[in-house]
Image 1: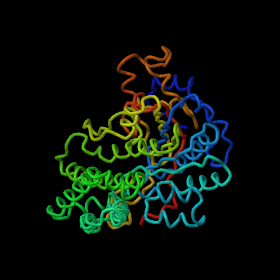
Image 2: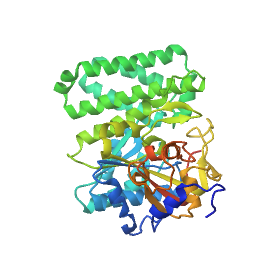
Image 3: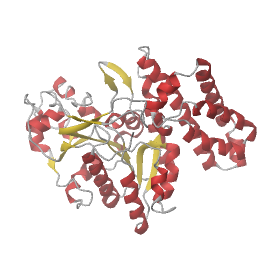
Image 4: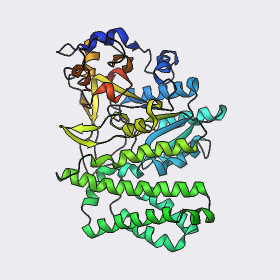
Length: 432
């Protein structure tokens, strides 16, 4: 493995503390992952990240870790960076509903972010194991691509529970349909082209609907049941957070965005994780799969500007040490660059772009200098309160230890880092 041009003081510490792993193979034995047991401790939520979507090695390692946490540590839920509303039929499929081939239809309109293979493993696992592994979507509808996956079932709910309010949600759906797309990369610019009156009307309708839902909860529950109400109001909240995100992104690109105003999506995802935790079996343990930038426990900044408070920060605040963030990164190979192209299905293309040499002082440079292959390191051991042999100068040098790709202080953002020596972009994605 080529090393970086600047020796990182972290490299010697990594050589002494990183634990080598054996397999990047979905079907391989799980014994090499046993060091994870000490890292996660008694955590209720273990988040597994990736520094880029669409990377083969990250997908395989997340699936292996899912298997390990389910089969050896008793985890029973996979929460995924996937729409909250759209997650319910996937959970039913994973429990055995429908045919094996039906999953393709469920996922036909979704960005291929790697949920297919974990779900197929869960369905096979659940046939012969108890308790079953559940699936939980946590994201705003269509990752910000459309409000319809949330509003359509809300309309179905109102049709039976409160028909006189149905016209309001139908009016919102008519506006939402005019800018719906396969992802936020399509929908956001289409939303920006709406007349201001339509943008404001949509926000006003959604806000009024949400306030009505909350105000008349006892009435709605008396006409139906608590669980159906809870799902409907959470879906409506997802539509509201997506609508807010459209405005925040438009302002950001126009150079007038408020500080950390893109946080609406991440706080919704964090809230969805907690929503599911409250409703699954007591003491259920959750595997959470999302991008590193969503699972990190520290704010997201670009060019020195605070742009968002990630899901992981909210979850760490709510759960404390019961939330563990495992970041995945690599040092050579390719990453998935996603240039915007509104003429494609999801509003972007995927280009396999060669990784640049890691920046001096980054954790990736440390892995490269240490010439480590597939390995995992517990970052708790490198923090100032742990040991004096971390190979880092005290104080600021520890704080400045960054990720080459996220530019975030790694020791605070993640509990552990899993390093794959190479990364390759999946070549079978259908995004055009």
